[in-house]
Length: 162
Ligand SMILES: [Zn+2]
Figure 1 (cartoon, rainbow, N blue to C red):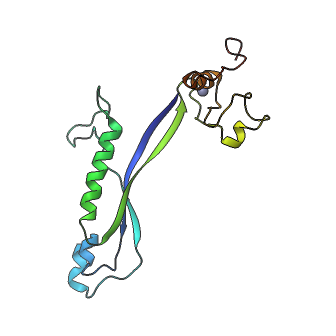
Figure 2 (tube, rainbow, N blue to C red; figure 1 turned 45 degrees about the vertical axis):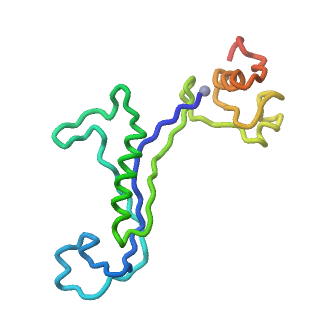
Figure 3 (cartoon, protein in one colour; figure 1 turned 90 degrees about the vertical axis):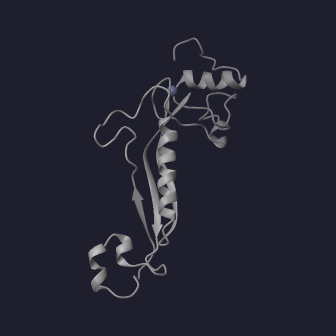
């Protein structure tokens, strides 16, 4: 089956320098405020913020993983909280939470790929006439697992040499 891992969680916000009443200090340039006058100008730009690691308590750093913990859900929740805080600021126009997803096969550990509808119908690419869209391509174990779940006849070579 397809195993999905997520990492590199991040909050991306769009900062709008030209918002009303935005001063340099709002962007972190605190000590320039006295010498500046007027509003900032410039185009909106994006900034990306990484959350603190779950296992990082400042005084102690441990693995993110512990039994029963849904690491992805906790990172998503942490990022959503950060995003909500960013969006309270007038010069943050929009934002989103992102992460990188990696899909690998639980049987062979190769990257997970699936047949497209065109490939499934293409006799030069598919496994046999039973191939359908979404069928994995990496190994026989994954293909037969996929077919068993759907009641599709297994590969003719099932049980033989892979
Ligand atoms: Zn595989």
